[in-house]
Amino acid sequence: MKELLLSEKEQMIRDLDYNNHVKYKYKICAEPLQRNIYQDCYREQLVSFFQMAPLMNKTVPLEEADYILYANPFARVQDFTDSVLEELKEINKRRKDNAEIIICGKATNIKALINDKYSNITYVPSHFTEYVGKRFEIDMKEEYVVYDDRNNVLNVWPVDGCLNKCGFCRRTYMDIPFESQSIEILKEKLDWYKENHPEQMKCVSLRAENLNQYGLDLEGKRTLNKVIDLLNSYDEIKYIGLSIGYCIGETNKDILESLVNCDKLVNMVLYFETGSNRLLKLIGKKHTCEMAKNFVNLMRDYHPNMEISVAVMIGLPTEELADIISLGKLLIDCEIDFVHCNYYGYVDKHPLAVYPQLNEQVKKLHLKYLINYIKKHYDNENVLTLCHESFYDSSKRSVVRKLENIKKEQKNIRGRIWYNSTYEYFMGEDIVVKSHSENITNEELEKEFERIKKQKKLTR
Ligand code: SF4
Image (cartoon, rainbow, N blue to C red):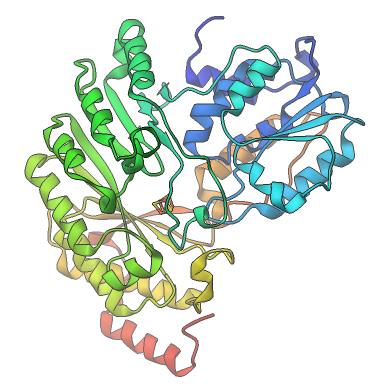
């Protein structure tokens, strides 16, 4: 089969068209999986779902299928359990007698909730692309090194899953199998790119939920340094970014040495999450503010031009102004280039759900206070940009626009399955702190706090 670019695979997935499908010996319906692919994370799309492209033109409508593939992210910021239950109920109602439902990936977490309610369901939590490929004789499997021609970057996912259970994370209520890819597998794939597409290796993005746990299942220790050294050894690779999943609290000497010696590091995203040791402990992060500061200073010493971004949350339970000031101070001390800021997304299954939750008004005030604090104290020429995700308007989020377009494009498809009301929590809005127009003073903010306190409305 002709080697396809990722954008071509994506197009094949989107072009699901029952009127033009190829006759195939197995009657498989992949629509319930295809519908939810765009809500899943970048990793799941690139590693697994887009690799299923060869399946799409063989897909038949649900009512005719002997096999129905289903997927759903199950949880991102919110809990998607209700969507999954609804969708499975509908599929069950419409499927032929004896048609098998094959649930792929994170949606297999629903197993405990549906027990034996529906017959003939197969659960495939990991390697499901390979499973479906083998079972239905289609040449496809997971790929852990994937060139994204839409963004011109070679993505490397050395490890999947995370063994921690931070109090605000979906990990506390769902399972994602933990698995590192061996250095040999990664090298084999990188060598393939070197041989066939060296030009695609220029920019590498190293990604995982927890990069620092790479190797724990292979060697019983954290060996991310081996991945960094491997990437650094290719002349074809010019730039390396640690784009997601670097955990400061799980660093070791070998990893630090590799980072320091890697002369191709251009950017790094760190997960400060919050800025006081009290709150870090409460949410279960493994680092302290001092560890974060020392780590950033070390990186700045060796890679002065590296862009450092951090992700933080506002509105964690028990958060007070002192925590916000401490967070502002940490961001300023570390001279962070970009801050990605979410409000804490409450889910009743989180361990943090046992605490009284701050109400929306207080969360907003905390955000304003943080912006004010940074504006007042940060005189770095590099303007700090803060990308703030608010609760209120999901229409601006690109994934929502994408989903809406797919809905429009595919309006003629029979057998639509579309229940999701997800993503209400996401919206991105850049706030350039230096020029943020809201000129409310801290004194005014404090008065506002006093007013809310008197009304005993700090929590919801
Ligand atoms: S380290 Fe990251 S992925 Fe792991 S539990 Fe904590 S927040 Fe979740």
